[in-house]
Length: 224
Image 1 (cartoon, rainbow, N blue to C red):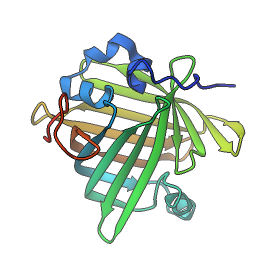
Image 2: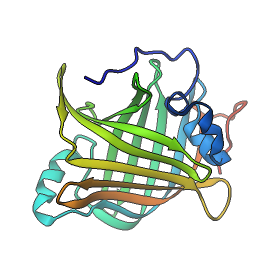
Image 3: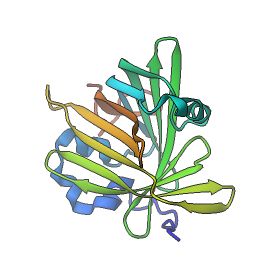
Image 4: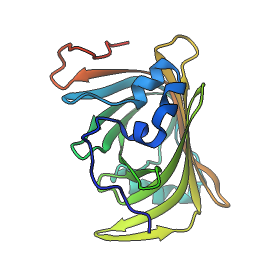
């Protein structure tokens, strides 16, 4: 069974820093800010537009995906030029909670996840409002950015953890924006065996770190 490292936040490093070590410094400056540590009393805020976002699998599976929407995992809508916002919130146990809001015409959808580090250095991402779906991710830093690929899945039913066969996979690619050095580009794809691509979101956003009270502070990245 794959287990989590006991909660340790005292070293001040982000989940990604603990997974990558010195390799984090290989990435462009804007991504080092995004994947680096968020100071105590601060949050990370990103805003941008997804060129393409939402469910892209077979029509017959859409009602099942609709059930996941209320749990903050994924949703049945799909659109182009979709405004979005992300909020990254460090937790006391060293994990990182993220909320992604998608603003479709006539509907707003939210995806929620919490990341922690595993004993083998893999990232454990618990998806949904209750963290019911676990995705284990392997991170790799490159000069162009970050790549994350899933290497395992599990369901959490109360205190019971049920490993799942690798019938689906997640791939995340994050690179610096082409237009300038302050924005970044993200491409997330979810694929299933025999069904192909089921869900994706891809676009560009600007990111900043700000105090919880919204006031400027030392060492805080100003709004882009």
